Amino acid sequence: SENAVAYHRGRPRPLARAAAEVAEQAAVPVSLHLDHVQSTELLHRAADCGFSSAMFDAARLPYTENLAATRAAVVWAHERGLWLEAELGQVGGKNGEPAL
Image 1 (cartoon, rainbow, N blue to C red):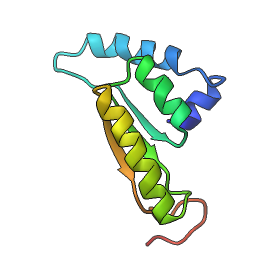
Image 2 (cartoon, one colour):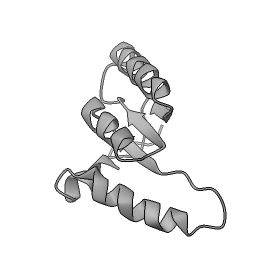
Image 3 (tube, rainbow, N blue to C red):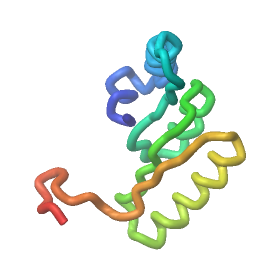
């Protein structure tokens, strides 16, 4: 997640390398997924570090801006063969907010 990357001083590459090492030992195909990426800058860095998918989370933006940011992220990601999951609304129950 973006928080995990921040905890590691903003460096996604060591996380990707560690996860890739474990994935290589798996008996089944494994994808490297970076969850809840809020910045396009980190999304771009994640692709460069070997993540094969990401969850782009622009839910902090008003809905129409979220759609536009997500659309741009999808186009960018798909041009590079990266799978993208997105959060187009908000999931309740976070940060003291009531569950929806």
